[in-house]
Image 1 (tube, helix red, strand yellow):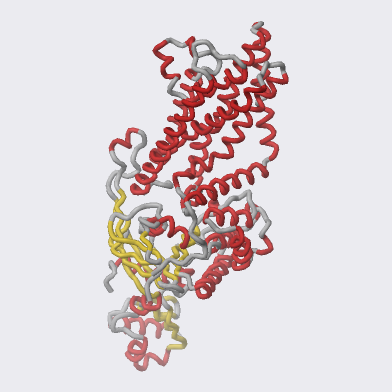
Image 2 (tube, one colour):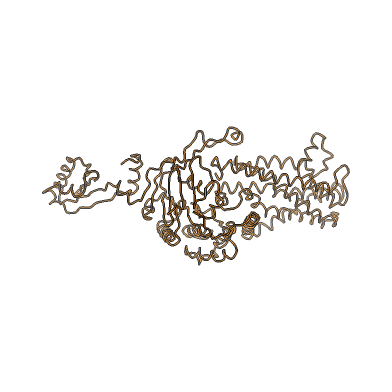
Length: 274
Length: 328
């Protein structure tokens, strides 16, 4: 018997687009329902910027230290949603019982967590940009010519964090908890990524870990691009971005593969949506 | 005519998670559980099959295998000839799934947005979607609520929206998991009537599970009685009643003396008798048919004022199938 459906066959690319568009639509509905919470989220980032501004003023550290800390903090804040949103959304769906509804759709399952997180990732990046803009208004010396490549770096950072989030999602599918992985990584990244200090202050035996986390590459590249000068002893911005791009390809491919394997095992064990 | 949904020797054994996984999370099973044991089933176009059974009977596992949420340990499950394991993505396009709970809906979106989102993920082109959304809403009488936010709808309306979502892509089969679970009896009756009409009109093959046995009986459907993964009965509910029903005979007498005499006579013939005021009740079955029982009373029958045959409630009928292990 042949399967007859009203819906024409679609290509893999079409499925990817439909999946992404579908989940963005869900998030837009949420944003529309709670408009003030979106506004509050953007207002909230004013305070860390003010904190570093006044701290730099108090210490007499000058604009360079302010912008140094501002960029590190903005990148960490901007990538936070990309890193944690994926597992938190998936876990929420799992615990609320809606994951089954998502899995029942004829879309590639491995894409679902990334699709669920795409809107949050974009708004997270926007948050980082807002923080930098507020800093600029407060007098932080931002080099305008570095902004286009800076945005590329931020985009690559989001992709890298989503890839890492996919690893955590694989963990979540099998063990029902993704936070241990994300928490461990998040804490490590805030230290070894060099958000508030250059990694040159780290002892040698820790510093090598910095080169394993994408946050370091994003923060370092953003600083060089937006502050307009290379950081002594560190790789140049184009090299940092090239390494980050390579990391994205490897981590994203392997993350999706791992998530797919986790789904297969969970499906076999019957623990996919429970 | 080939079956739309076909299960052949379908088995599923849930195993405890492997030892290495227990380092991170304890297994919710301590030993293997056989959820389905060599289940055979065929559901044709235009047919409703009610899956009945207590918790742990294997109903949900069967549904989950069909839509690809878990894999079978043995046997096969097909929909329109597509294998549930290999072609699960394609099956999810031709099977409409109506989950038991409202939370599967996007509560903050409107009915139309819910259908739109589902349609896009199903891969429906914009033009087809524009035609099907009003059609699906019309089928379930929700046209007036098309732009209402789901959170504000009644439980019955939410159930109808879940049905509309299942119908949207034009499926060939429907899987309805406790469709009337959160709905009041009147709305549930309406929903089941709607489902019956749709099955006839669209020639759908339907698998339905429900704990409300009166609803299952109202559907006049094919029934699969399951218990701990095994099929206890497979056939029409009418046949089930014909084969298994032991109706109760109530004889209302004119006075207490006649009731006692008739009760003694029936007991002497091996019937299980209960006397309640002027009425004498006994369970029929086997060689004891109504006519034979009344004829056997002879002149005592003159003191009977009313005779009533009370069919066995479906609940008791099914319990009887379970307790006798499927042997009559």
